Length: 97
Picture 1 (cartoon, one colour):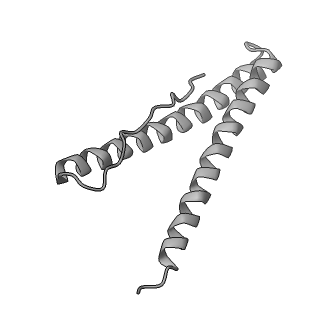
Picture 2 (tube, helix red, strand yellow):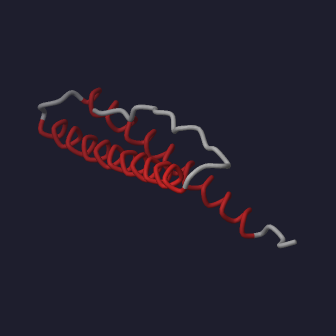
């Protein structure tokens, strides 16, 4: 069962070179990729633990813990997605001028 480490992004500056802005966007892309990979691994781990519980190799308690962790990861990912969509819609609905 893997957990996602919480890392801070570098501070955003309004003035700076394009190379700094590219570095920030690549860091965000890497962070997003790691989060998606962690979510996928968590779901696969829960599936594997459930299968092991059905066979009898793992206790039901461990299977429930894996399911709860996977559900929590999915809930966080869904909340982040909803916030991103809401932010996008807010920006698109802003009047120009």
